[in-house]
Length: 367
Image 1: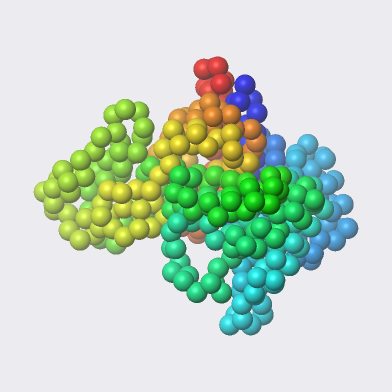
Image 2: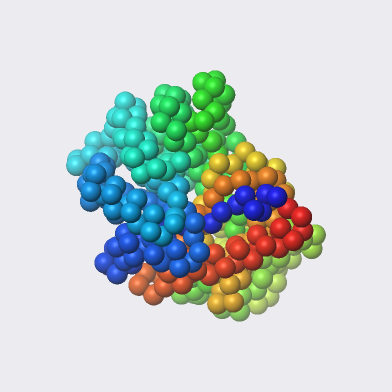
């Protein structure tokens, strides 16, 4: 059954603030993840490997000792490389430089025992150029460099996971050039698609709600718009929302430019409420068997281990029905919105409880 083939872990990026403050070191972060019931771990070298981008025998001894003691599996190594990998920020790596840097990530991942690197690549945000990087010198790993890397990744036994991250969507074709490279080279074990839950969000988080209110939006209107967004993007057969009617209602409630901007605003990580960019559960089910890895992105989980941000039960079921086999690794980023106020350990624990409940429900349905 597919639900039994889905394992839970976390990127240690989820504990980034506690690590930055010195409250958690490598051992502390791994222990916190084990406390959540995590089976696998994703590590980012910039913060946790002193010798980055290289890895010493001393670190490897400690790394494997801790994993053995905690009975955890190394899953993924975070690839954050971009072309500004220089002491001089005005200089940019050419394709050869990006190739060499990424090869270093692949070699390090191999030493760490990781199956994947989460690849920073030009298809990360799908077809959307959210950073306005028309200048190719500001791109990351393009499809041509990816094609060069594929045979080496395959030889090392480390797959390059092409993260599909909001506003990018599984169905928008933003990774087609990279998938074509896999087909042309025949290096099917060198890379593949990775889903980030940011492309499945249906609702603004409490922090976003607070930001709108701090900007001058009426609290009662923001609450109303949250309800409408949740209804529109919960695929339960009752999700028809007439946004013209919603807009008229907001005007009746005294809403102005800020509130109307929430409905019709410019494209962002979630898109406007009227035209939210989202991969429905049916699309996730369609792609599930082709996914090699998943980031369980989240900003907030309620105290009762439920979520408004994303419809976990339907998406976990879609993954199980579609035949996904692999890890969902938590990537908590709520602390980036409200620094120094959120307990990262607690939020990872909450999400794991929620996802285990959803996996059990999928299994009970025969998946």
